Amino acid sequence: MFHLEENSIIELTRKAGEAIMNIYNDPNQSSVVDFKSDDSPLTLADEASHNVIVKGLIELHPDVPIISEEGENLDYQIRKEYNRYWLVDPLDGTKEFINRNGEFTVNIALIENGRAVAGFVFAPYLDELYYGIEEVGAFKISGNSKLILKVNNSETKRVAVRSKSHPSVEEESVLKQYNVVDSISVGSSLKFCMVAEGKADVYYRFGPTMEWDTAAGHAVVNAAGGKVLKNTGPEEFIYNKENLLNSSFLCLGF
Image (cartoon, rainbow, N blue to C red; front, side):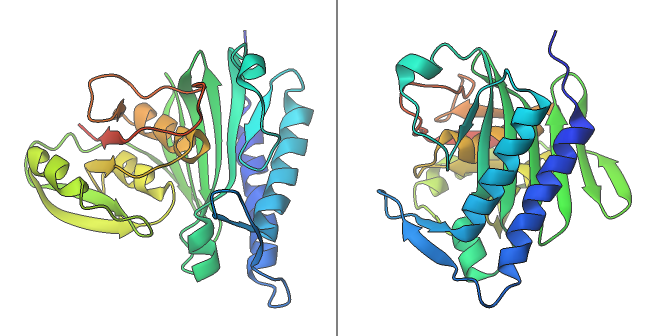
């Protein structure tokens, strides 16, 4: 049986965050070093975090494969055999990193049979770490405090969380169905964490994301009692699809 060493993954997530902040705080480091094929930016911090995470995960669990945004583009014929693997976004919210608003995260998720069963989301600038493990629970570590996270289960006057960098007019028609009366805006996978923490109730994403963008936050929401659905439901959002590009999804805290 697989034993998840949660404290070791928390420590590793923090180490990756330190690598990011070393670059974030160094005025001599160039922010953008390259652009990927989809024109998304790549920074030294993406690469530094990736290197820390991959090295650490291999040391902890050498038999568990890793799929990372900054890693090798694995052929589906290889990865479709993965029943258990790590899914990593070394720096989620690269635009937030470049814009220096602090709302970027390190994402590490454990996927089993296509489901996000554990997720670790660390916002190094904010020094806030969220994590969730199936059948264990969801938690937030901030400073010296550790809080148990539970979704709101609110039936009325719900709050939506929206993307800071990727707003969408398609959100409006979906959110109308859920008695949304207010909204907040935040970057990266922190949107999932706002739902898990009960600061928001609904998060709908129409625009494109990749599997590593969503998996860790998805696991945190699940462990806090919420759910993430493909498109607008009712099917659960799953992972290790032939195409790692996500459909739209709906995250609900009730």
